Image 1 (tube, rainbow, N blue to C red):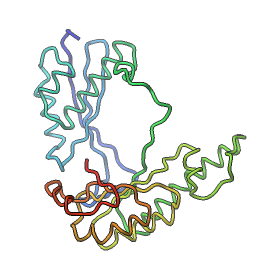
Image 2 (cartoon, rainbow, N blue to C red):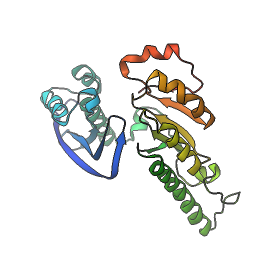
Image 3 (cartoon, rainbow, N blue to C red):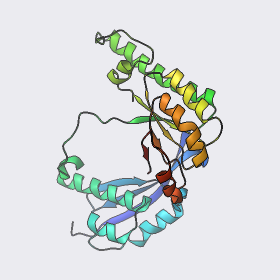
Length: 258
């Protein structure tokens, strides 16, 4: 790509069907920055999500993109040197990948020499709420799986085993994620939240994300029961500057950070 590239960016706001809550707050819409990169014939598109947690805003991300609009011979490697990690670099990096794919007539996975896989396993996130409401969200998740089960059965493609509400077989067979990720808040209702979800979706795999809301005391009190409830992973239990706490605690459940 030796010809000058035209770079543009704008904010798009997408209203959410329901408010999304985590321990640090809630939102009713998704604000993204959409970047486009063009060689005059093809246009690559990418998005970045400004996160206040990492001192990013729509204005700061747009300003970062604006700062390199006149950069000559911009490519993905040069971009890594021009901008720090974050939403602006992510949006432009994706746009550059998209542009190269369109110019070459190849898919991104072909350009990267990464073999395509038939499916990617993901999770369904349940927003932080009261135990009853989180249980209801889990129940709705199971009903979605059952509706897909019934639709496939009517098409004459009945599964090997009979339908069972919330069964892992049902979740796996009909395209519904079999993993639930629960947002927790570090308060006295966390266990009740997990118990409500487990009751509504007994066969689902469970992950939890505390979004830095726990204290060591809360961790010690809650983790043994979470283990009994079949929780498989705890994400970001403590504030980012308190990682050393993990060295003093038992880990019956794996802990990760983003």
